[in-house]
Amino acid sequence: MDGDFRTDFVREPQKLKHHPALVLNADYRPLSYYPLSLWPWQDAVKAAFLDRVNIIAEYDDVVRSPTTEIRIPSVVVLKEYVKPQKRVAFTRFNLFLRDEFSCQYCGARGDLTFDHVIPRASGGITSWENVVAACGKCNLKKGSKSLRQAGMSIRKAPRQPSSEELRNMGRKFPPNYLHESWLDYLYWDAELDA
Image 1 (cartoon, rainbow, N blue to C red):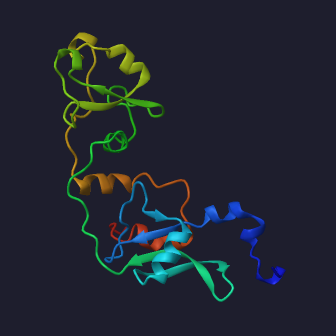
Image 2 (tube, rainbow, N blue to C red):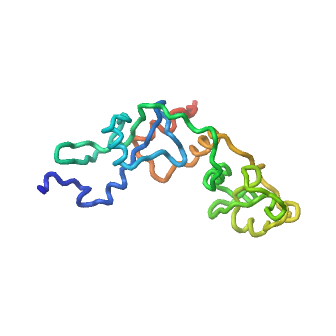
């Protein structure tokens, strides 16, 4: 293969991992904020080739085949609207997001686990209304005791969030990496400062 056809990616394959594409719904909003809706560049190129998305922003880098050269998409928008799910999955991640990644007993951030407000040993169930994010220290202190027995209080009563609430909460916690081409599409529906 002639060196002219080789890209930096052939010489540095790890570089390709740094080119995710932000995926927007047909209304130009991200499919999700947290985790941010991203596709690997290969999926974005394939979707564009299959005419499922429009490319609205690109990286400066290109990929080549023997007959085609394409700039790597950085933002794609779906051609067909995908209706957001109304039901929120009860997952550890969504629980932590609902509780803003902080212990609901002391407010600490960092290594979190989850705790049953009414202990399972006392008939408590694993549900949105009975489970909260807790740091290890508070979880150990509370153990299988009630809040009153442990001398603890809860900061915010646990409840099932709506998908809209979780989406808005996710906007408060941007990922570590945001490409400049994404910024106009991430917060366009936010209220502007006066």
